[in-house]
Image 1 (tube, rainbow, N blue to C red):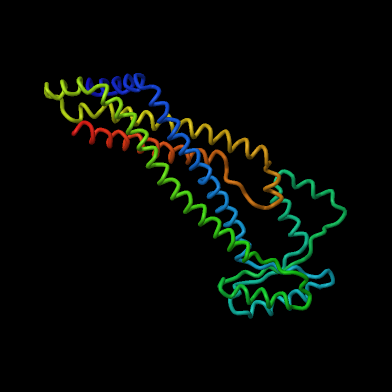
Image 2: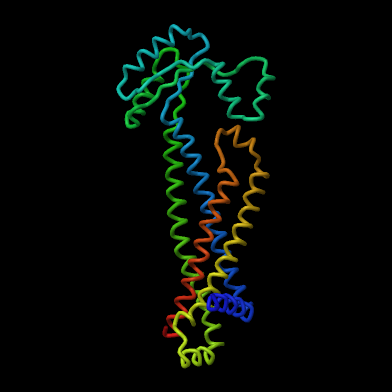
Length: 296
């Protein structure tokens, strides 16, 4: 326990002695994590939007003309169910469609009660079993007598998936680059501490101090830098994300029927990711510096 408390005490003393360089390391890692958080949040929300629309892509909705009776709609459903690649098809009334809209609008659903009449059309929902045949099914549905329009999001989903993949790859490449830069900055900070304590380290080794006894304070100092950077970056990310949601407003996403990643869930998971990255960067920077300059 005496060695443990000595290591912690020395780490904080070294942090204070090289406060300016330690602060520079903290700023560098914090900036890296903030940039990563932008890509991380963008990737999560774009992916969530893509998954939300993919739910519509798994089904095709055929809007019916106003003069189409339910009996005619039943004939259309029977014809569609015979199509290859169709899992199921069913009728959705305009009243059911309005209920769905109110659900999507959440607490603001009561605003739709002020409408003079229901402007939504009756429709037929076709569940797709084989997505490769979705194009042909959509064309067949559009050609049916009584069909006014077909809602089909294939092109939108394809574009969203491409954007998602691009953001994910960009985040990975940027993360690797910024982690390397941060490790170099931290190693420079620890290197300065090693130079300042060169005589002391030589005496410690001369009197028989083990390599890990010497390494300990430098390793803990790097970890302290990483933890502080992670805490600052998580706090700033939480503040920015909260302000962004307040600025845009939940109503916009409700109207667009596109969900936004929950704030508390995002920040909680981001905290663990940033903590792991911060500690890893700090520890790696310390280890690299010690291996090179302590020969230990």
